[in-house]
Length: 114
Length: 117
View 1 (cartoon, rainbow over the protein chains, first blue to last red):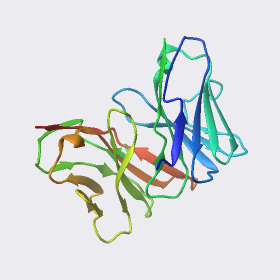
View 2: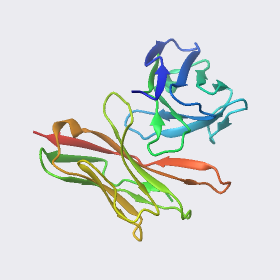
View 3: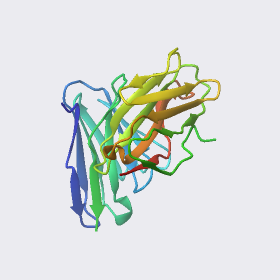
């Protein structure tokens, strides 16, 4: 069965609104979760590392005020895209920071901003 | 320099033939791991195979095998007897440590494989 879930799987929103994406570790406790963004026909790019009980670590070029990450429990991390714009339309995938192999990814969330 | 290089943006292969997807990597960390993932149009990342840097033998998983040539820093994926369901995007990824000792997972740009009936 699935180890990691993401909700929603697909979301369409208007420009300027905020969207929250949840990533849940179903069978394991995870102190660390990773958030990736994948634009069409491109590879996965790490956006940030989410640490339970502390601030997330963002990759260079990722706006921390725009992509808010909260890792309030050992099984849940949320990514909020604030004031979304069409250029934020992308596929967002989380990964649970468990020792692998394999590496456990969520099924992804496809965000479309109109 | 890129850490993971996949030089084949797209490949077309006849059904039932074998196919090799290329992957080269670069790291100064003696301990690292190499992964291959399949990503169908649904977007989910499907784990295929893993090779550790200290593994003596090439990894195999069913129809998947990894041609690991450490000295050449290559980790090519071989799919035997290809099937229509193998059509997807394939990513090579490397896990190693950065200069601060933090785990890093780096993906290649991917190869889109299309199996022709």
